[in-house]
Image (tube, rainbow over all chains, first blue to last red; front, top):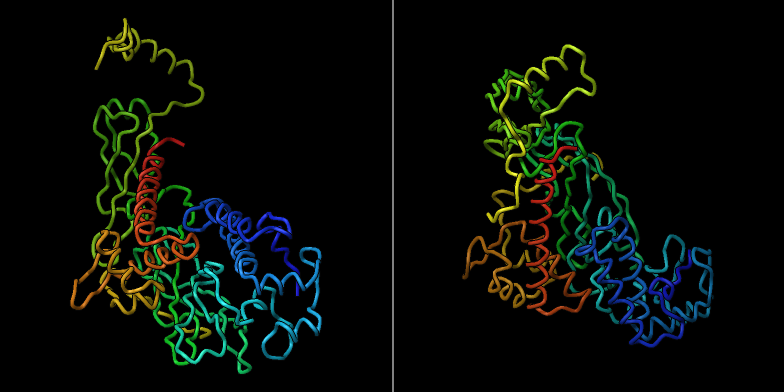
Length: 330
Length: 103
């Protein structure tokens, strides 16, 4: 199995006191906990920190870990037969396990570790105490999927594969691969979690199976931004369309919609197309908002310049009138 | 399980019993009741037969993680969950406003 340097994970020396280890864990947990941290890789980092703390905070486990000796991070190693005799419960091959599994199965007292798991494809809870004679509920498992807006609007099926811990015949925890398909109903939104009861990890000693959760992410769309069930679309219009009004074609998920622009549109104004957003699960749908942007061509020809000059001379409009003179309250 | 087409619960109308919430989250009975009293968890139906909206499961699991990983008591969990919920609402509002700005 590959060696992990738990002391380095927590950023402490090998002779750190229990108090120093706890302090280091708390500081790092506050920074990387998946419930509070948003940066990429935080969840993986938290898993690493928790795994290290789970072992180093328990004096017996820490002793067992120290007795494995020093190895380079990621270096292949095997515990000596003496180590196995002293610390490992039950015989059998040590292949296909990692360091965390090794300490997990020792049956030493459980620390304050919630086992947040790998999140997507990982999970929470889980069979912690092999050989338990009381029912333990199976692990809840989460998988993430990215859908296009069109798939979210219409509903779709997604495939997934994950690895769940199961209790082998020898009483040891093994990883088992599972795959399947989940029906995603129409009308799901960003961040929504769909629950499939009883399809997570197996229960132990008659415990109920855990649940499977599918977390929905929406892929960025080239045109629309989704906020809940509403969609936003940047809608560029020409200055004369803004001034005079126009009939324009606005794209929606169902195809183009003809819209009458009223004269006098301003930049930033929102044009609401009711019911043209993402559909709700049962009835109705969110709205589509076209956010007006008055734009100019990058270059304008002589004739256009002449017309603008004529317009400038004819117009009494003074857009910065309110900025003249000293500022006034309110 | 390969090639099984799994059908999720209908989230909009689905509720879970108190026992199911406890089993799915790892929270204790008293902790859940206190979190209801704090107004963090909202019941679909109150005593004697407590039921919760299925999305409370996610909230409860988050509460249990915060308790275990930071050593929080119920007041701490209630405070953290309230703030996290507020942050998420503000992030949603921010995304909404950003959608209205020109790129």
